[in-house]
Image 1 (cartoon, rainbow, N blue to C red):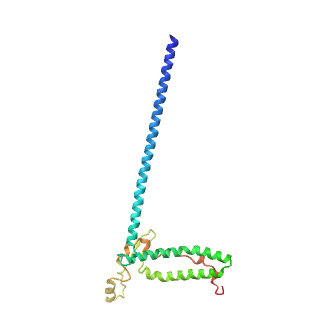
Image 2: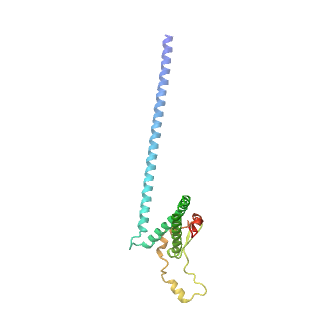
Image 3: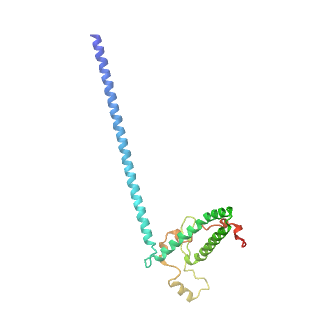
Length: 209
């Protein structure tokens, strides 16, 4: 009788332990499922935000391209030309480093004739850009250290200004378009990445080469 009673007691204990383990496993599985579900939800939410951000960015770029269209007769054709020229000049400035490497390579293989032509052509291109900049960015605004843009003040008539000067200054200035302030700040000024002369090779400047 005592043996059976003890056996029954231990059986009850084992059952309780098994039930407890089962409950613990079930709880753990439920928690894991909740965690996975939460991660999926967060991932879906993040994907949605990224998609919306990407779509917004595409729409903004599309709007910028439309606004800065260089199509003849478009509303802001002049602004589009300024943007295109800014991007072109920036690309030319950046290319000087690669041109310098090319020149050194040509010198190493003794192809001085090609090197001279390339260096001369690049120099002429940079001179052309330097000459053209003042006619592209007339009445250039100033940009502060924090990126703030200050438009030129056209109402400062010096002490020697005549009535004719003041009247002519009040008229629309053909060198300055009111729409100019629609440009992004960095397009209102010439490209700032002006290259130094280090890309050039002095040996190629010799007229005998």
